Image (cartoon, rainbow, N blue to C red):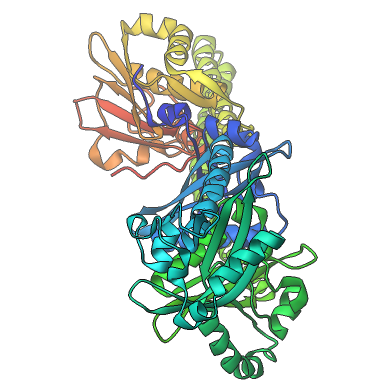
Length: 635
């Protein structure tokens, strides 16, 4: 059996869902059901936000759908909830689907990457510890002194801060970093004495770099003792605080102006972050929106406002990196208030630089858009409902018009065809009455016999009409069927007709799977095959049934070598009581193909005839594989 798109879709190891333009699930494969814990029947026509878990996540998913439509493809990560309530870290890839430039929905690739995320978190923690250690070492000049103050070791931080490489300082006295005034004051010797006497010496003051330039230094000198408590020297840690000193001076100058400009703004949360993302200022709007006072947040990392999944995915530092690289970062997303409640925020983070174009931190502006977003969503839902209502009304009106037209045609044809056997019966009964009065018994019996045949034809017409109406009334019972099995059963039912006509039934089944109502599908092929045998003047009528897959549809062809159908009658043959020949030539009621058309359309399929006179006829059928897809019109 050849591999179909449907089979491939089902056998994919990745989870796939198909959404309509509003985000409702139209289809999903087995892998997606396994990941989410929901059966397809439980997901069908549900919003994709069903997997989100949070009450307001429909806003987030609408925002993601809008971005996916704009960008054609969007990859997001976050927590999702399975049917049993357990959470898993999900990577969702949205791809916008277009049909002839018209947006028709989304394809969503769903991956459960919880295990990978746990490994990444462990690695992230390890990397964070390493990063902190390395940054600390690079930010500090750390070296060892012997008891007299000669330099024994040197690190990268010493080179970065003081400008000397290791070979230039080893063995030299640490007083080389002091100013001339400090040397005259014997400050280096006094620092060693205090450190040895008390264990530690701390101070801030000017120090000298290689080349003679000065920097403001924070110095910590610690006396070192070995396991035998013997004094062995000193550790000396120096940090360059020149930038901080200048920043503090600049901050003092601008603080009053900033406070008067920003602190009283109530509609926007406006605050400053340092270069590491720690909060250094707070305004009234931030207090109103997020619920924290300045004392509660100053000095804390700004990730306290982010949901857990954003923190786990490394979103806060990523936003700072983007703002630093491009100058600004903007987005909308969920943030948390002090009480833990979420709100939908508009965020703008801007990198702030000093006059020397050195990064001094970030400004962050936050606005609460929850009410506006909820109002927009309600408006969108109302708009969608209105559009759906208009479409439903238009579809219903079109269906009612078609039904009314069909009913008018049906009434006219039925009225004519039922009157014909009634007139026949009435005529022959009168004739028999006359013949009996004339004692012409033999002729009377012939007339009665013809009247009986008229009643039989009326009975046949009524039975076929009942079959036609029952096709529409009976509920379809969809089940998985084998096309070759259906054809075999039809051959068994028509065994006598095939034998009498000396007919042959051939099959070329390349697509065998059907999802349909067994009773009506058997009725469909039984009518088609019996017609192919009946309207045939060949010595050995041959009926060929072929099938193959076309995308998510199955195409079936029933072809014969019979008398064919004139081109102008190809559509008309499906009408009720439509006959191209007199009953004396080819007996029948003219309802069989009408029943076939009803059966196919009830299965959301298409049927049409192709033929030329004296060259046989073929009936083409297209049915959806899943029993619900829309079938494209044939040319």
